[in-house]
Length: 565
Image (tube, rainbow, N blue to C red; front, side):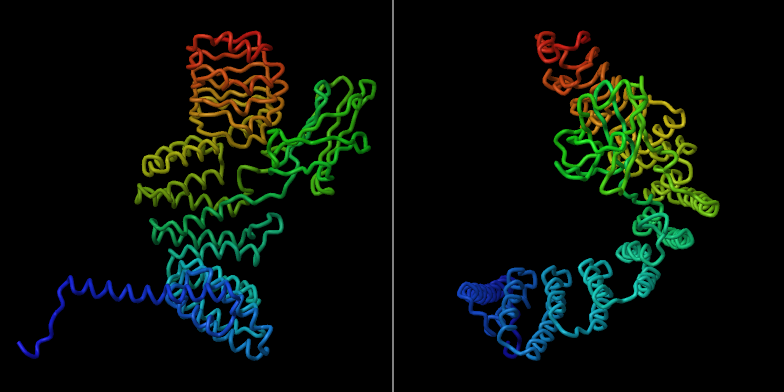
């Protein structure tokens, strides 16, 4: 038996490890307590710097200690020479590199490294780029390192062309490198900006990028990185804030201004100015939703007597942000309302502007994706891209085919069916808006569309009749309060429980809500603020089964003569 090594039992091993952990914890706790005591007494010396060095070397995510180290260095800067400080900062970079090896995704370590470099007189930026390359080789999706790389590139004035080449090299090595695709989407608009479309790239580059993305997702159809980049390439340009519509009501004595984006009009400011026949008019603006500080639609009451029935015409002009956007309309004598609005069809709001070459490329991509879908019938990214390509090429022409692909997509990816329903609702509403504009109508028919949500209400400001029947809507949202011209709304056969959007609509006369889920009379409270409401149909709602429903309705809506229950 002599000379043999005694093998520890499992229990002995566990006990030894437990004692070792306890010993380390005691050392860690004691050092931490000492550090906090020294911080409280403001003992900013080398000893506490060494102590934080030990703790952070084991746990780089101790954010408070990184803050304390910065306090120590700032104190040292008052006492030490510039050369001594630069030497300390170089040592700190080495320490940080060790910490990053412990945890390459330590927020505190990367942030502290940025701070140290900003304190150095002549940082070695080329070495920092090499460090980024090293950590990205270890993990190409380390977004902390990517953020740090952008910091280094910005500070050292690395040309964006070099960074674009860097992303290309990484992508060709691994098409699944989503961070490189994303970085590419930020660099391209800087290098090849489209002068007509802010934030987008020239068509020549766009076509090359489409080919690169297509090569990637055909190589690995199951990887989402290239599909998402392709979706960005197909995206519409982010437009600047513009005034979509200007509407004035003579009999109501009010004016509305509709914007392309939600904006804020500060009380008493010159953000939004109104001119009547060239003369500034002092008015108070409020949002259509009343309680919102940022909104698509802003309203004002016109001062009494400002619109004369004797004047042949009135010119009303609004100016946004010192001329960043403006719009004018003419109200003629004998007319009760007037407006000036942009067209969604003319502005190409819901599709890309396509040249012949781009149309040819996208059509070819569509056919290729259809072929790929036959080989990969359950690839959700391929199905979604087919839909997006159809939207880019011809949203109305491909409407039926798009709906069919949505059904397939929901069957393939049922976990996200709610998202696909909402996306489909958005596309269908865009199509209906286009059809309404082509017909030069103020009536929009959205019935039997399977809508789960409403979109683009800012494009419906002049609508007088809206049919939302036989959909899957759970509410009439607050954004419907923008539809100040609305006279009739039909929303039968939905699952509506809330009418929050049907408030303060000055022209609303008829509301039909048959077969919904309105349970309480109080749910109808928003309608009390609609002065012209004369017909309300509530048949088939649970509220109709309440014993005192008629008397409660008469109390809530005394101005509505015809309530059908």
